[in-house]
Amino acid sequence: MGKFLTVFDSASSALAAAFAMTVGISAAAVAGGILLGLVIGLALTYGGRVLALPFRAVVDIVRGTPVLVLILASYYMPAGLGVSPGPVTAGVAALTIFCAAHIAETLRGALLAIPAAQTDAARAIGLTFGKTLGYVLLPQALRQIAPNLVNTAVEIVKASSLLSAIGVGELLLTTQEIIGRSFLTMEFYALVGLLYLAVNLSISAGGWWLEHRFRLR
Image (spheres, one colour):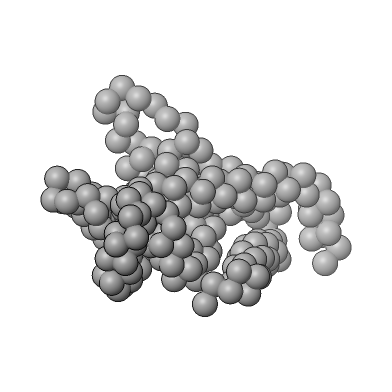
């Protein structure tokens, strides 16, 4: 225990920076994924064949591809086009696309589950499609998918550990480097597991609070 505390004290700043990197990357990917997922979900539902078919292909490909493959592709494939994104940029892009694909499909299902009579009623009182979407359809759909948004955010935090494969200095890679120097394998893997657990429990608690605060049930 004494050796662990000594190593932890010397590595605490690196761990704190890596923890902040993990949280920042995850937050950026979730925020971008929600915005992009909303756009794609609407295109899948109301875009007609011209928009729906290409987006359907993209969503199915992303959902059927392992996250690690998406991360490696986002990092190495742009080099063929003469573009060299940094590992953080490539990692955030991959996680954002992964998040967006899952949110888009969930949103599409929620919108299709709303009875058509509500759209007809909105049209009958003179609401345009945009107002019907903003005032009637999306609020109901977002209430339905709120638990799935929390689950997706948790998955993104866990998937962020895979960014160590492209050299992003997130929590797992930094922990592995510390273990490589100190050989305190069990102690530091237990610590990093608790940190990931703390982040995900915080996300779950926030989702629970929002669910009850706004009665998203």
